[in-house]
Figure: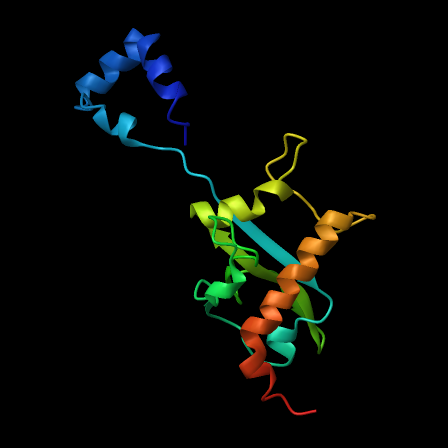
Length: 163
């Protein structure tokens, strides 16, 4: 796929390509200008103990904490808790016999989620960030906050686990 912005420039500078598109009936290029960029956030958290599998037997399905109590928000667009919208089955998990692996904790395109995670995005030009490693105090705090919210979200199910 070619990003939307460069394509009109390519078409303007390539009469032969424009001519070819016309011959095959692709003359209506309005759709090019209806495409809009969208910010997104996707996050996985690595657990040595994949508790959602080991304790709760959650191997598929989604979870979402968008209905968090109002007192947990600041009243601004950015909540004070991490907005979670993840899947139990999307991260790589290995079992032998106990499971360890990645839990997808967020996959969102909304402004609130993007605003919450924006301060943690990389400043090195890479489209991803690894947080919480090698003395990364800010990243470690993010991971702790996400874990606390996951535990809060799963408290009813975890309370049913024997022992």
